[in-house]
Each structure stands twice: as C-alpha cells, then as structure tokens.
Amino acid sequence: MARRKKNYTLDEQLEMITTEIKSTEENLKNLKQMEKDIKEQIKMRRLEELDVLISSSGMSFDEVKTILVNG
Image 1: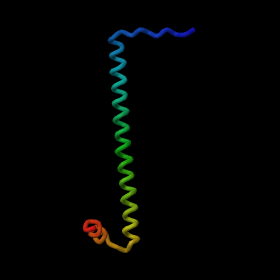
Image 2: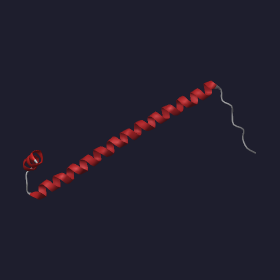
Image 3: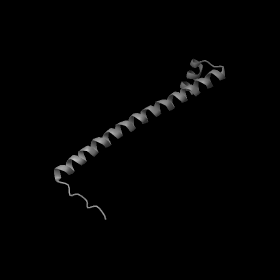
Image 4: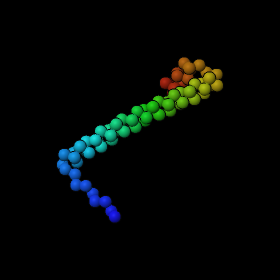
C-alpha cells in the first residue's frame, strides 16, 4: 500500500524551506572554496611550468620579463 503524503502546516513548510536554503547556501560556500583552491593550484602549476621554461632557456627572469613587456 502506498503511503499518504503528510499535509504540512505553513509553519512546517517554512521551516523545511529555511533549512533547505541554509543547507544549499553552505554547499555553495563549500563549492566556491573548492573552486578557489583549484584555481590556485592551476596558477601554481602554470608558474612552475613557466619557471622550468625560463630555466631551460638559459635566460634570466629579467630578460624574459623585458621581452614580454616590450613585445
């Protein structure tokens, strides 16, 4: 036999919705922090790759910087 759906009062509905909003906001906060962390990891990986390229080119950081700035 199927269960009957409970008829919630307006106060109960409001409480359930408020709880769901808080949970969703916390989840969003966590996701945004994860996004920030991943972007930082990508940035660091790219900087490490760039450092390897600069080192292997035989040029100094300042030489590469000058080339990039002056085109």
